[in-house]
Image (cartoon, rainbow, N blue to C red; front, side):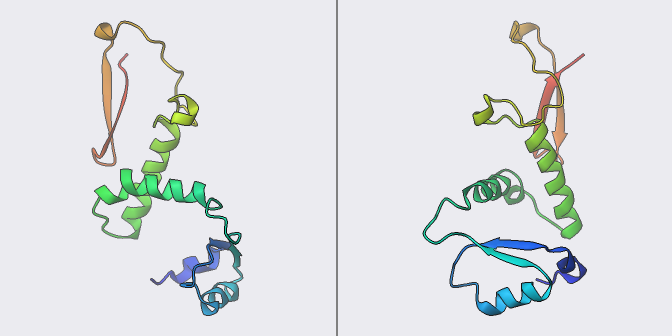
Length: 132
């Protein structure tokens, strides 16, 4: 993988202590003025939040798309991030998104509610809101 000019913007890399990462790997990054931070020894949960996010975005987004190039990947990830933070329900937040874009609806008679569907990521994900 060739990062080109983007490699200059890397400030730090958090990695585990796997033998796959050699000293040469660390030297390449430090030569670019990046700081290599290793996770603590025998602490399997140290990277749990990042791994949970990576797993979620893979299962719900990138595993279901055919990515054409880096630009397409950036657009897809940005759209999914917006969906994840503003619309997707989270169990730990009582099924509310972290940054809701609208006030939470009160539960009424569901037979009388009209919904409006909005496709996200070319229809991979659908978001539903009350119709006006």
